[in-house]
Length: 142
Image 1 (tube, one colour):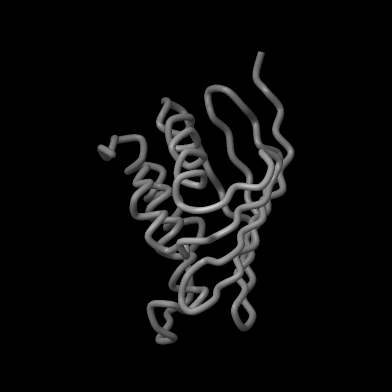
Image 2: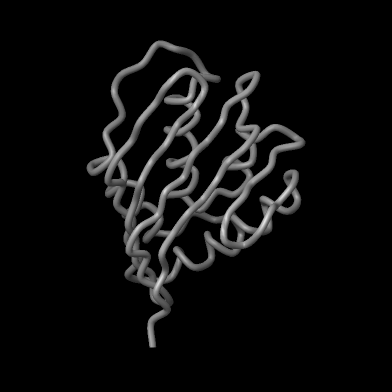
């Protein structure tokens, strides 16, 4: 997927609003995975996002239960397309890490929706995202 200029702006915004602590825990640690995941999201790079998911990963959210790279990738492709439109913003409000779990709460706005609140939880097993949940409150724009 091509990097677009608004993705670069979103990436800079994420880096400024969501500074992660310096870490030495390693590539499969929840902090490392979340950092890579959010950088790939900001770049609109679905392949890079999927690289951190286990082959049999499960993603549970308002869209139902998605299983594996094909279904999760289709979801992220649609999300990347929405956030590629001009004027998109994404702000991380809170991050928490413990053992093999990463959590982050966020707000966002796109040309299509206002996301008043979103929350993601990532469960890491063997250095990959095994399970992710998503909760959000989205208001479609008229």
